[in-house]
Image (cartoon, rainbow, N blue to C red; front, side, top):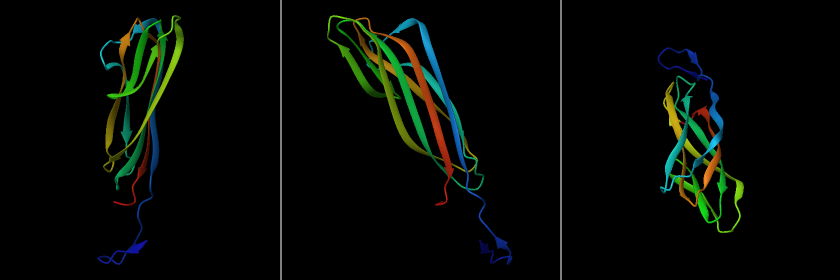
Length: 154
């Protein structure tokens, strides 16, 4: 609380705000998707609208992105999973038997800011690539979550 020197009125800062917003989906592919041979290719996307609930202060937020892909890897095959231009991992099968349901789970955490009352759409690209030897994807799980707090340090 403080006294406004111009009016001699007692004033207080508005309360701080916090919010959570997210979007997720799971897709079971009835026909497996061949892993693209390109180094990186967007195979799916997910978006979330993030709003700063505080009309007075900037907000700081944490953005959590998660991608889960299930691969089938025949002998002498390989596949990469990634998020937003970042190759997260690569699986290779150098054996002589097929590996079923190889599960890749990749996560990224980043920070963002929003102006007072601002709403922003953030889209995450699910990527796969470096496919060889007939590697396929049978399931895509994607999730994007944001935690937002009004910032007392502006």
